Image 1 (cartoon, rainbow, N blue to C red):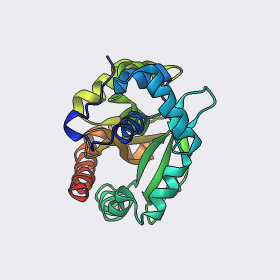
Image 2 (image 1 turned 180 degrees about the vertical axis):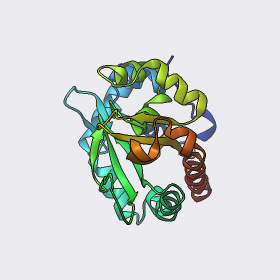
Image 3 (image 1 turned 60 degrees about the vertical axis):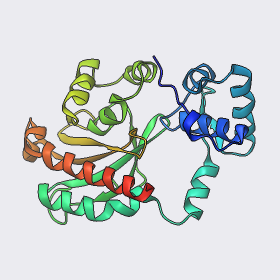
Image 4 (image 1 turned 30 degrees about the vertical axis):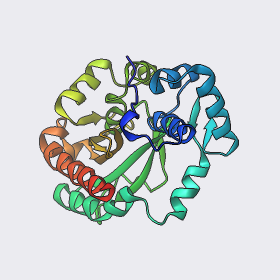
Length: 246
């Protein structure tokens, strides 16, 4: 059953704006079909279709190659114009502490359509590095960050995300149960990683904080070594976003 957004207690009194906000909120988690938008918002199909096309016209929403609705480029422009991205603004000190505590490279990933994108990183200052520069696009089909970004999605997106993935439904169930994910050579041979979810003020998973490095250092059970400190970093970022929203 898809999550449905309820705005009865959060109405601005301007119905069309409230409905457009519902559509945008429903798109926060990634590509969405019209039917999924209808289910998520609880609005009538013709209303959702009309609003979505109007938002496409203003570039607040766009379409992917499969015709699904996604958040549009205008939102990125507006966020940039607003000054600072709250997550990225809070990320630097947290990632540096995480890198120093583990001795491994630390990153934050966000989902953008069918990819996950590195939006912040702190590299190891010396030695062998698994470098993932800011802006790097990686697959949503492999790696602990992809597991974390997918694990708490609704049923339809879970099934879609698991198609051709290197991980299984059992792995994602373990991620949800533990609150963190790990991978061994999933994205790249010889590389291990540990990731935990960063949640926005609504409670939705909006990013994954990760460490990555060679299996020789992280061992074949990297979560046993580093899950606690990675989860702590994720909690700090989640709390920072909540405070910024107050």
